[in-house]
Image (cartoon, rainbow, N blue to C red; front, top):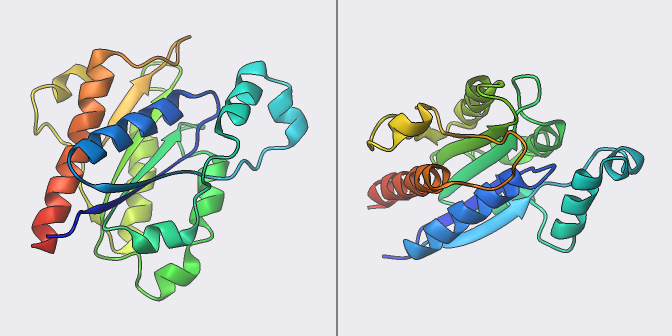
Length: 199
């Protein structure tokens, strides 16, 4: 059977969501998936980005890396979206990318794929669940098959989030062992369901 094709589409301001996306890509590749890791285009004004050193540093970090296009979703069997929280919702950058998907949606090319999601916030809760549910709403409009982690693994009781994976950053963008395990479980579960559907 051919490898499952996974696209990871995310936005990251300071690097946490980027690290989460990288971990998901690594875990998926270990499962034998063919992976496209894609950040969305930056839409914030340059002067705003450059006015915050951590933000500017991360933009330099991802410069030259592939930027998400609608074709990346058309290609995929399974899709993972990632976004930091912004007032309990996804970032405007990710939303701008979603708004380019109308032609694929109209052709039914976003339907019948597996979708799942992850997020991060500086504070505990911080809008994480509503951000994940906002992405789930988008997936429902696509006609996607939403595959949340639920509590299908004991480790999910560490972050307590059945809708996806949520990272509380505080002042650090580093991922701990619980974050890594939750991200691994998220993508392995999505790939497992995608493989069952393909079979």
